[in-house]
Image (cartoon, rainbow, N blue to C red):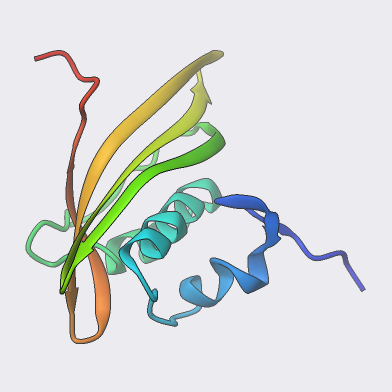
Length: 127
């Protein structure tokens, strides 16, 4: 029997007990967990999941994922008020031999019992 795989969003947690069930169709219990599952989907190249978890109002028609190696995720803040929420995080990745940080404040909305990613702002982006 193969050893359980660590979850990309939280390496000390098993994938089958963290993001795996969400990638298989279970609704995320919180916006933070949806954001974590979306990070894991980027790591694993699950573009269908990324599109399905994106709110229809802001969802692109398709994704063109760039080849990159994701290095880690840090959730800085999560705030929820009814059916809306925000999650601030920093994701680290490497592409073209250079390391980068993606600092985003994401907005989420719950509809029909499911959380969806709406959009995000990038506090570190030049004005």
